[in-house]
Length: 175
Image 1 (cartoon, rainbow, N blue to C red):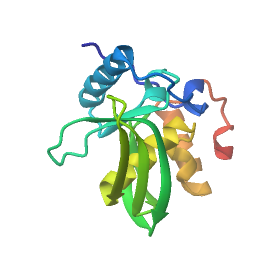
Image 2: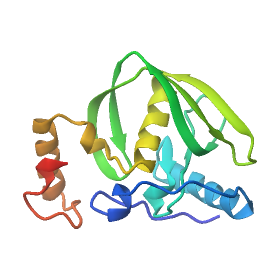
Image 3: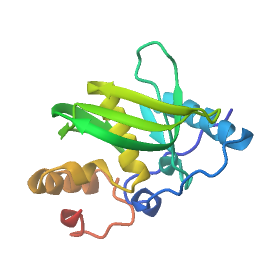
Image 4: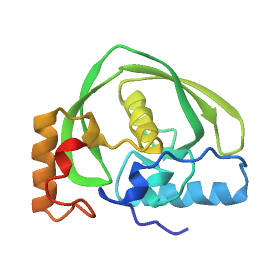
């Protein structure tokens, strides 16, 4: 197994919508295995393919409930309900966390790494993982979920830490 470099805020790949997976095969399974290793090494609870520079609609996760790591291919959230505020961070924006309000419950469909159809009802933490990783696959970063002032403060912090790559000074407030 090998780990990938996690792409950080400012990398253009993080702003692109990932392409649908058209074939689930051994290469995709290998990618998922390597992504799980990368996720655990970070450490994180989820990792989207775009975060490692791969243009595929795929993410891996482990919610810590004892089921071990899972892979979702071509995920779609078909329903969402309620609201839940929770402190959320991102491996592509390391060391920073914000309280983000997202739907409390979601229904996610997709495929597992063997090509079997999935239909998962998730709430709270697992629902948040699904929404966060699906955002990555749609080119949406956690910073876009912040209110204007919090986003401005976050951009200042990122600049001060030298974590802003490829984003000219003054551009962050329009995320």
